[in-house]
Image (tube, rainbow, N blue to C red; front, side, top):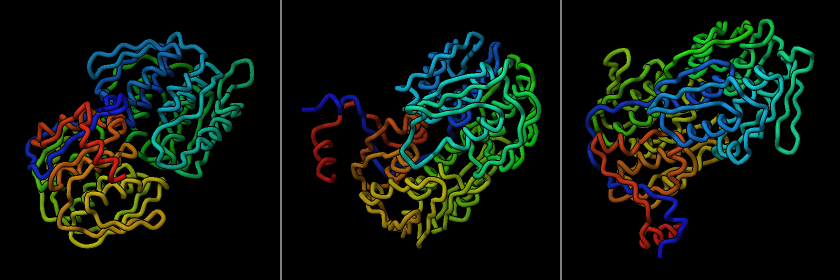
Length: 442
């Protein structure tokens, strides 16, 4: 008999070794969209965001903003936001605990209201992601910040309750801390200089969004960002950049199935390190225009990977590349330097016949002739994508559980893969046989 829990947790059944072909549309970037939604709090007028992906994380962020008094209306990939009557209510812990990006509201709320309370965030269990860099940055701008019982209390002293510009050096080029400080600085009094800032494309997207509302920001995309505070921001109509991680994942879908596929829209410069590694492994990546790329498959060769902040190789592509390396000729070394718990997909790939050994934050991957379909469990967002990719290439049937992780960050990934010719489907009720088989291997 199928349990209620199984009914609530569908699985993805993949018949491997289908050839893919065609063009796929890349959705808006999850990591940009979430912070832009928070950034809309900075403006007391109407804001419109276009190209918003349909994701569980986006839905949770809308719930968090609504709980703070923000008015939202969604129509397809367009979200209208009005934060005119934003309140000082605390974002609900049950929502914040599920979404790391929920913490982004602290900077805009503090800049707008002069005080806020935000629970410490949750998200994928991929390692320590402390908020101390965010907190120290806000403190440097004059905020009084304390953490009590899992809640961050922040306020700006003085009659005007306005943050002050400051010179801030980040010990690590944290994307989240850079974004939090940059948003807070847009309405601060005076000039804020962020040194050792993150350089990810999502930083530039946030800067462009804030500039479209009248913010004065220079240097985004470099290690030094300068923000000159303004009194208020105005309404905007802004489109989220394409998701470089979704694009990279789909490039690997072509490479791992030896298939030629095209992607659009993409910004090739956002994928420079991913494209370089793919080319080093054998496949061709052809730039077919300013926003279109095509993968031409070739026999796969081993290569070494080390994750680094942008413009280095992204940690968000490490798991997917590891799936590809399992079928590459030779031995590869994968070094994860960003998150200490981001090798948990190794055990699941091993179930499928991968030859991987792990020591600390380093994995040695020896290529094997083929992978075999197996029941596997996704442990985090990018691990879930890696298991889907491995299933596409494997002999037989792969059953991926833990799809709540996949749904957090990929907009209809299985639908896009089906359109390319993949043989996979989501099954709402796991059969007794599948459940028993998964229990046996566990």
